[in-house]
Length: 290
Length: 178
Image (cartoon, rainbow over all chains, first blue to last red; front, side):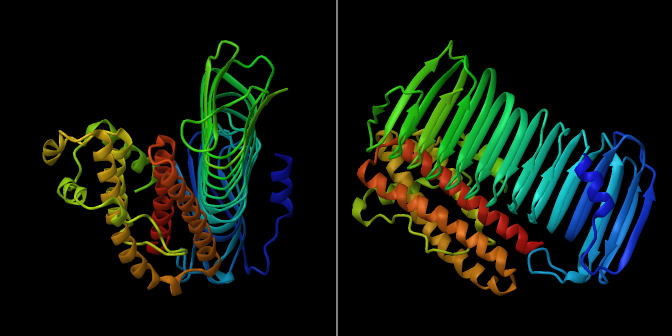
């Protein structure tokens, strides 16, 4: 949160022309939609009602702030840009937006750096490129991007990330996690993970954390490695197979697969209450306790 | 069609859903072909799909659903294949799927090549690089299936790779349409 407040105070846009200072009424617990083609978007959740929009607009950008029922829309529209076909810097904007802390937040952008802190509700981000940083607090986060590095400091209930490339680092995760990427890595740490579904073609998947009783994990990589570090006393039934990669599950020796040169291993620790399925083609699998 | 919709479609087909188009006459015809003449998946690196990706997704879904479940889809034409083994039907579905997709691939590549000049170069590069990663993975799996054609894990991996490829194509299509 301090990071976001600092950014709100210090953030400045590169050679953007028009300053923004707009305010609109909105009680806590409602929705805010922010659309910005390019530039920066910084959002802070504050313990007060109303939405404040500050920042700078490029010469060819227009800002529209409006409210319809429970939703406030903050839209920056550039002149003539296409979603994928490029844009001029003059169509960009730096937005510093303050929202009530329990606002349901949606952000849509093409190429923008995005930072969100202090928002304790649902967050949805759809962007083509630009890194994303989200602080602790949201109950659920849904991110869709072509190319973004993503850092999340905590999510209490549900996380869904769909990327083409870019690495994802998640701390203090709880509940459900869905991750899909072609070449990006997932570094996930947390406690009380109940459902993790992670898939990458060439990226690695690393999970450090505790599982809920009855948790279900499905991890799939093609050439990426899978590493899990679980707390001592974890109860789980593992079903691990790799076509040509190695398997190291707490020193238990895998057996040769019926097909191909690789190995497979079905092994339970504790009562085996969690179900963990890991499949790779050539990536290595390592699971250990600490 | 997003990944979730594709997943839902595949899962639904795996349970038992008739395909939108009857694939079985084509499959039946291909059963007579020698295996060596059957086309394998060999997408050209960096090729683009576009407007017809949705149609391709449906094709993949139909074929993959039948393949995944290892049982014939209960379409009327499938009744004629009732005496064939599951493996023979799965192989036939596989063959039909690949052939249909290769045709779609050629068409879509041409359509998307026309749009390349309108796309933002850095993002185009990212998408092409990642398509190449997927294609390389599919080539790995294809090669492995030559050695272990009955490995169900490889089949599932290939379907996953197709899902990734189509998902990426769909995303590119959505971006170019925006």
